[in-house]
Every structure is written in structure tokens, then in C-alpha cells.
Image (cartoon, one colour):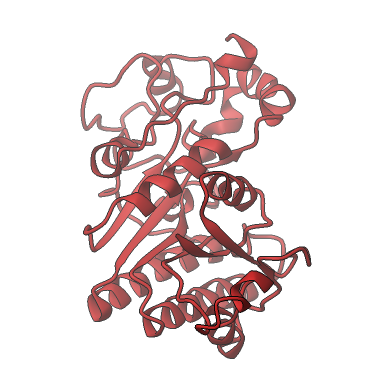
Length: 294
């Protein structure tokens, strides 16, 4: 597949780009910080003209050889964003994230791209950046949980989901949103998880969950391989929690009074990923336990 991938130089994107390229896909990394090394473009995604132009441009010199013009992209993966609050002013976070997503979706639909995958966020559930402590409406949190956040970053992600749903209704393309939990790179297990295990309260805002960057790359692969779902959103997390407590211990310490939607496994994540497993075949492979033997 020829894939237009925004944010491919970021923390999560770099793993997905490498994984897809290793599988043989032709991936164009579209990023403000993209290296000038072929199949990379530096694009301001908040500029609609740049996005439209980039999506209909040659991606590398080898594409000039066929003499048949610019090939169409088979899929768009949109990961680029201001990644959290407190990097730029709140209104800029909201503006950049919503406008860039609109521009990418608009350009992709106009170019006839049949598959679009975009990064949403765990923050849509309103817990991560809430002012003060707030508990989920129920556990484990699935895709039906209310999404009424307070912060500009999460607001932008909720808006992006509505925008994507409208573009899907207009175009009929497959558009899948990934509500990605806290992304962990392999080296971060040894660096960060000892503190998480010693102080599990540090993981409350992330719903005690995480997603290995390599498993997130696999989720992108599975979405690209699964056609015909129309518009869907998926929680993306690893199977276990990011703390060395049982689910009952987490409930006792942090979620007293929160309704349980169903019974949970002993170490099962509170960020329910069963829909992704059921609908696209997501099968996370990694765990902090493989490194720290917790």
C-alpha cells in the first residue's frame, strides 16, 4: 500500500512507520520535523493548501520513473498533533489539532482515499487532564463510556471524532479512530515503570493502562488490513495494567463506588480493548512484566 502518514517522526508514529515499511508498504512520513531522506515531506497540516498539495505530490524520485503521473494513496494515517496540554496555549492546541485533522480528512476524501485511520486519545474520557480527581462512570472503560472532557487537548480529540464521522457519512470511506492510551517505548519500561510499581497512584490519570508503541504499530497494521467497517473508534491498550496490583486491589484503593460493567481478570486492563480484538484482530504482544518480571 502507498500510505500518507502524518506525525511519523513522533513518539508513536516512528514505530508505526518503521513497522509498516518493514512489511513492504510505501510510507510517506508527513511531519514538520520529517528528515529530508526520501519519502518524507515537511508539511504544515494547519494549512489546507499544503495538505492538498502534499497528498497529490510525488513522494520519492522512483515515482517519476513510470511516466504515469502521481500515484494515488491507498490509505492515510493521521497521527500528527500537539500531543498534550501545556506545550502551547490552549487555544492553539485546539486550533492546530482540529484544523489539521479537518484538512487531512478533507484532502483524503477529495483524493478518493478509501481508508483513513486517525489518532484519538484516552483523554476523551475526561480523566487524564481533569482538574482534580474524577472517577470513571464505570469500569472497565469501553468505547461507550461518556466523552465529556474539560481540557483543550481532549476537546480537540472529541471534535476530531465528530469531524471524522461526518466525513465518513459524506464519502463512504472507512475511517477508524484510535483512542490511544499512554504510549510507552521499549526503553521506558526500565526507566519509568519501577516508579509506577512503587507508586501506583501515578497511573490514576491514565486509567492504570498503557500501550506499547510496537503494539500500537500492530493496531495500525490491523486497521489497514480490515475493510468495510465504515466509521469506528477503538480503545488501544495492552492487556495488563501498568501497576503491580490486581484489578480488585485497584478497585479497593482507587475506584470504590464505581460500578463494574462486568467481571474482570486478575491483571486485566481497566481500558477495555476487546472491541479492537473482536473487530480488527488486534493482539498485543508486549508487557512491562517481560522486562521487569513483576
